[in-house]
Length: 310
Image 1: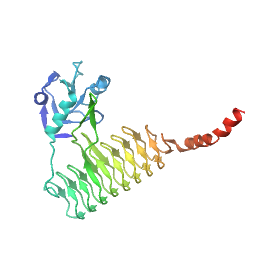
Image 2: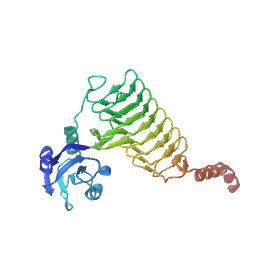
Image 3: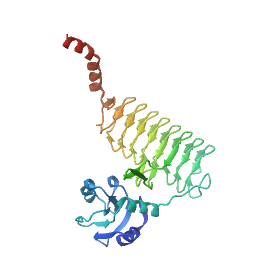
């Protein structure tokens, strides 16, 4: 998330009651999760095993719960609960906005857009030229939709991230402040759900086509000209490079990368990064030729067992 204006480190520290270590003259231009931060961003860390990764990231300011050596050119904001402090700032800069009408007045909708009945358009939504939205769709706050996009009946875009912070066996919801960005010439099938990012954007790349009943998790980035068949689920923060094909009922875990032009056969389960240009099958998914040899070997296992134990 980018702020509408710059904020000094001292101003942010006062908001969350933090002690400042390091540079006090920095300006903060946004806030984001650690995997998406850029220079000028604020992020947080509250787990020691991620301290070094956070301190070496591009973030200019890190909210942290221990006094450690501050990297050169950065600032640390020391508080007891970094997550609570970060969540407080998220709610401050992007408060909950409840819709009171079917189409919010702040939405920028091109005159060429065609919408069937019962389409809900949230705050600060932008919709480009020649877009067709079928009935009973929900387009949540801050969503950006490009030109020549089709969205079929019952789809929900920009719903909250399914993302919770666990502490003392309890789950606290992260306040979602990201967006969904849908590029030009995308087709989204019926009854799909696309969650917005926690702090950054969920992106559906140009020319990508999605079948019905597909779920896209928070912060997912789908490349250009991908094909995603029915009942696919993609976990949060996963990246699909361009021209990836996912057949029906593929499940993809969170925080993964699937390489350019990879093909994943139906009902496969993806639990690790996959290189591009290959076809995969199975759960856990592996290159299809390897998986077929494994299955062939398993079919002969009873015969081998009988022969071995004669």
